[in-house]
Image 1 (cartoon, rainbow, N blue to C red):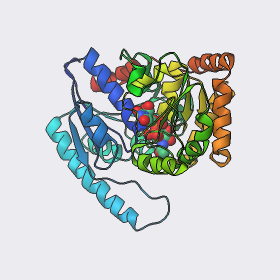
Image 2 (cartoon, helix red, strand yellow; image 1 turned 135 degrees about the horizontal axis):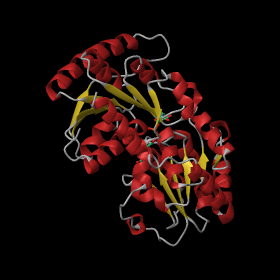
Image 3 (cartoon, protein in one colour; image 1 turned 30 degrees about the horizontal axis):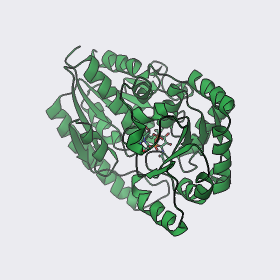
Length: 369
Ligand SMILES: CC(=O)N[C@H]1[C@@H](OP(=O)(O)OP(=O)(O)OC[C@H]2O[C@@H](n3ccc(=O)[nH]c3=O)[C@H](O)[C@@H]2O)O[C@H](CO)[C@@H](O)[C@@H]1O
């Protein structure tokens, strides 16, 4: 089918949005007649990222369930039902051949609405532990693309296909020109990139501030993204610290050009979100991981442990995280080129750079039915 009409939905955080965007980008390149509509949440990161990528975007009001018994859950159910109703109207008007969900609670009402209207649905699960929304949607989804073989058993055997994470392909095959001068850095000096997932991480930011006097002495470059909402706090803490930051350190709110930048760095430090990890393995980057303990079933620790076991990463638990432990873990790898190379090779063995085409094949299969 060359003139497919596809609705994408997914969001809240970058880990659910970028796999959808990578798929849309590849579809536009290989199937230019495809018509796409993205339905996201009013309050998620997708509201900025998707329109900025020139993709038609509609927003619904939704919120996630609280795990404890809470009155707020009554509001959540109300919003879910209203959002399902709105999604039905949008789907009836757009008439998609298939609706694709990449996780996060906004994809709940959108794909549920599609299923009520008997429109085929495909979901993508980035994690080895299946998210709550995807678990709910899987009951009536036609196919599920998974990034980890371990996730397959959570779905019906005929549903699940191992495809990898489409965003891995985007960074691995990025043609973007990259110029370190944009960051006031030199291309000839090794660089470590530090970021706490798509939103930044409070404890990681605190440890970075604490470690700044040590990073101020090193010869490699340090690029630190704080997360947009946490930037002002980090800046205030750095001002309080009164340090004159060396030219080899850059602190920024968010990295907009990750597919161009990530290939150019020598070590990546951060959370163990599934989409970040898919990028880092596709590129073969050594990693220092500080998994977030605040996610479903502690799945980031599981992600991180598998990379540590493979020799691609070292891990610091959030309990062990201090300025000193962070600096030591980073410095040890940055000072040791053979170790860095070995870790990079092991990381690359786990990468799935062809994921996007496999996911698109799955979408086409379902759309053609
Ligand atoms: C707290 C939480 O719920 N985290 C989940 C969320 O993480 P989160 O949204 O943080 O997702 P990931 O770490 O997997 O991905 C972050 C994405 O944002 C990009 N990026 C990040 C920082 C930046 O400055 N610029 C930028 O472009 C990264 O390159 C990556 O593509 O979704 C992941 C994928 O389902 C899950 O595994 C995580 O457990």
